[in-house]
Image (cartoon, rainbow, N blue to C red; front, top):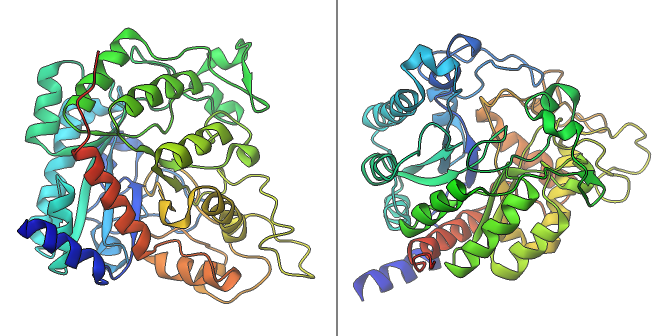
Length: 401
């Protein structure tokens, strides 16, 4: 009863100074080895939004950001992880670095439950939440799941990443280079909403994994899964009364590949409840139509950038509610971020280098609000909604056979 009144007090007062990032990789050096330049405890290497595989999130930029809740994406390349001792050791080292960070900075904690996060925020602390991107080679046995979930504190799992695994099919991405990661795209006969989709859905091993994770009240991130994988996963999550989560995506109607979130998925989030994060990356906001929403009259070169991101934010907010939308920024994720605005040079991110640094989040927020007053990319209400939904996950029923 005391906790009930504490929670009621918590949500009736403004305790968040800012918002949430649903997906970034502070410790990517351990995941990609020498392919990645920079590390969390060294200066950032990125100088422009175009930079790839160069650090743009480190200890300093995280502290200087306006983010109060960071979902830490733990990723390891199956081959390059050899430089960190193999896939599992790579993930362990990334968690070790997260623990080192909070030891060095006691105003931060690693929260393994929504209750811990709520209490920390009430005490004016900031929160890391551990998430695993790609379960292959990491969560292969029940013992693995117990270790990484129960002992090391991973709270969110993205079962599928860039390519098909024995757990199931991965969403096809746009472009020849990314299609090489999943060459079955060349022969797939299936289409949905005008794009090719993977003919591989969820495997028996994938069903086992989701059941084990649901049983332990782990939040399942559906990002990167094929349409068929996601469709089956949604049925399992509905049975378990778990809200849906897509941490870093873009609208398929503009991205024009399976990797983008389809309208039927958005409808499921609206119907069942859930949360969606948009990626502020030029690659993900291709061909967004800004003409009638965020492009000012007389500007003939709106291009992409924050105006395209804002357009997708407005459309998604209208569909599922703005409190259920945030950003999954994918910093250190080897992607370009946002180029400068061609229509109005009002902030530092309008300079040639664009939006490329984690601590520029306040400028991005201000720029988006300048474009449209209803846009709040790092809102308190979204952060609160995320924690409410996470609480629902932790209270969800165990999966049923």
